[in-house]
Each structure stands twice: as C-alpha cells, then as structure tokens.
Image (cartoon, rainbow, N blue to C red; front, top):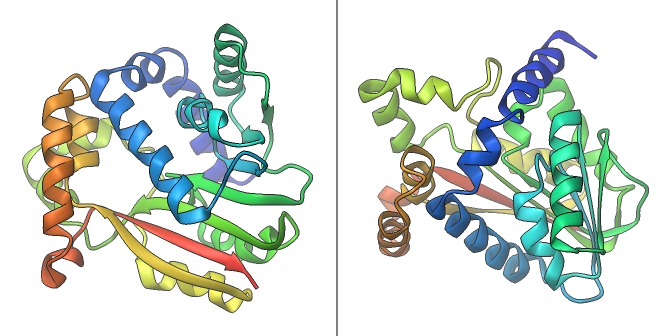
Length: 247
C-alpha cells in the first residue's frame, strides 16, 4: 500500500468510527442517496437480474438502498470499520442479496460496476490503470458508473473562500477534484463508450453542509434541474458522472 492509500485508509477509519454513521443517516443525506439510486438505475439499466459491484462502498448506505432493485450486489472497501458497519446494517435490515468485503475488487462478471465519490480518492496512477482492469469485471455490454467532484465546480470555489475549515472537515488529505473530460478519456482509451453528465449544481454540497435540512436539499435539487440546462452554468456544476459501457 503506497503512502496515499495509507493516508486515505487512516482518514476513513476515523470517519467510519462514528461520524459517518450519524451524518449519513440525516434526512438530507438520505434524500440525496435515494436520488442517487434512482439515477443509477436509469442510466445503467440495472434491474432485478443485474449483478452489481460497488467500489469504495463505505458503510453501504447507497448500496443497501439499491439492493432492493437488483439481483445481487457486492460492495468492497479497504476500511474494516466501514465493512463491519455495512454488514451489521444489512443483517439488521434483513437484506440478503448484498455482500460486503474488505478489498479493492471482486470476481466478475458484473452487469454494473459503480463508484460513488471514489475515483477522486485514487492516486493518479491507480486512476489511470482502473479502466483497463475494470474490463475484466464487466460482462459484455456492462456499464461502469461513477460520481465525483468536478475541478470546475463553482460550489467548491465558494466553499473554500467562505468556509474553508468546514470544507476541510469533509475532505481527506489526498482527495482532489477531477477534470470531467480527461477522466472520461481514460475510459475511452480503454475501449469503453464513455460519456459525461453533470449530476448537480449545489444540492449535494448543501446536503453535506446541512445534513438535517431535507426541504432545503429538495428545493436545491429542483433548482439544479433548471440550472444545469444552461450551458454556461452547466460547466460549473458540482459533481459529474462518467457512464461508460463496455463495447
């Protein structure tokens, strides 16, 4: 394990030792996660027979919501604390078609591989190598889906200016924002049919900063739909999706 991954693991072990469980259970964050699940289902075509792999699953809060809509879901994460929590929650909720494992991958093939706020934690070399390694995990025609912060996001610039300490609280030492087009190009170069979509403008940052304010998140989500139809503003969106189909 290199130094970047070691620091990431140490950070997430602390995060998943109490704070994340409380934060991710708040109303606005839960509403955000439900929206993510609906979006993943729409753009990947995942359904009742699909086998899904989630990279960097954390405590599995998105995965446990998604599990009801797919055939099987495997979540992997390097953090033992996260996997313990995810397994405990799956058992408590009686969800039997999901499995959580420590590590970086699982035996395929899968119909969908997803990575929610995961790629921007990877060292540059690991990110560059990931698309080619994923081809072995995806069935022919399978889809990779990721969601990560954009390097052009206006919300990040405003947050660093107005509330820098609060921004740092939610960021690990080595994570960074990613440039959307160059990220998608990594997948195209590995033989995927890849496209980019902007996920939101300020609804996700709002949910992170004010996790108990569900009505605020819902209002922001509605406004995002209008804002992202404006080309000049669309480029300044907060988080972008890479949707890549194995050819």
